[in-house]
Length: 214
Length: 214
DNA sequence: TTCCGTATGTGACAAAAGTTACCGTAATGT
DNA sequence: ACATTACGGTAACTTTTGTCACATACGGAA
Image (tube, rainbow over all chains, first blue to last red; front, side, top):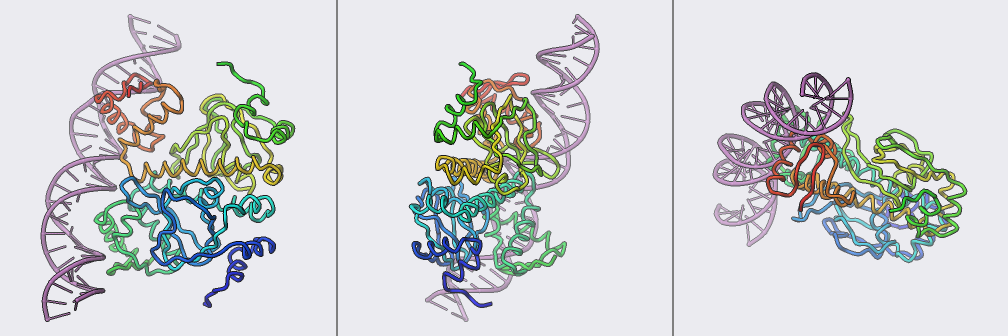
């Protein structure tokens, strides 16, 4: 697979539904920003000055508890936008979530001053914003389903399956500890359940990685 | 307190930030719909033909599990809109939630055909939609905080406090069973915890109602 | 008043999840 | 090579939550 490095191509590929005018405008007026794997892209309490569109990479969104533990909610991939950044930028609100770059990530930074105009002039933008919100909202509902209605065993299975699907690989490079903190539980609980899943031949366990067999 | 029955007054009171033109248009083109206490206003899988603005009453929003148990998320009151109805109406998507009228409720039904126009012509509408989404999103995040990070005791306390604040009364007409299903647990668990709270003089228990003392 | 349905209280138990403690081993740095 | 750290396994135990069984109490209807 060839790696795209030039912004117009990326826009075409991941934001192809934008009107040509809109793409043109974004290219002219907006700059990009890159993050290294592990960088925090936003933290709770931080103010937005830009709406962010994901061009390259992968971003992990967390909710943070009072005690600072991080609960994983969903990923953003190229073609997505940070829903909160759009709205909070428009309304000058603080961030409510934690966003962390999973790998090297590039985003397009749209200044808040442009938002009103985009919304009024470009139908494709307004649909995009609504769709962004709807999609994130739906993901939150699924998260709620899991923590409200399911046990840890099902949540773990769902989590692993989601990783496999999202990352498009059966070999997950992840530790028990990471899974535990994503699901807001303890490492021992995860180890126990993983061991059970291995005995049922759903997965195979290695040091620092897990193979999905199903 | 005098009860308002005429729509223009209600619009002025609860949607005063709308431009006069916008209010005028809504009055001309939209009809209202009323629901009795306990009526389902929408169910999962149902399609939207209208975006709904709450004019009078109170609506309870639930997420439904596969087994049909209902998990309470938040209330809508006059001045609110159903976020999902706005977006799903625009995009012709199915409902993902269950909405139930708590008491006699009147809503303004905005046909989906109008949405694009409203969005483009009325800045106050577009801000309203974003704000609606942001507010609901934030409520979902708080819900997630509770079920992900807190135990049942804290969740119960928060639930009761929220009822007291939202309904503006210290006397809650609610049964243990109702609380249990709102929080997706069993009646016995709630009875136990309520008893503990009563011993700590946080509340006083009666048949079919609870008094908040704190 | 009596009857009856609903609401609540409670003990005993089971299951799930969280905690503590400790061990072995793989990976890493010096 | 050696020490150090990170990762994972596991037993024993506690706490929390869920379930079952059954008792009791209240409040409206007849």
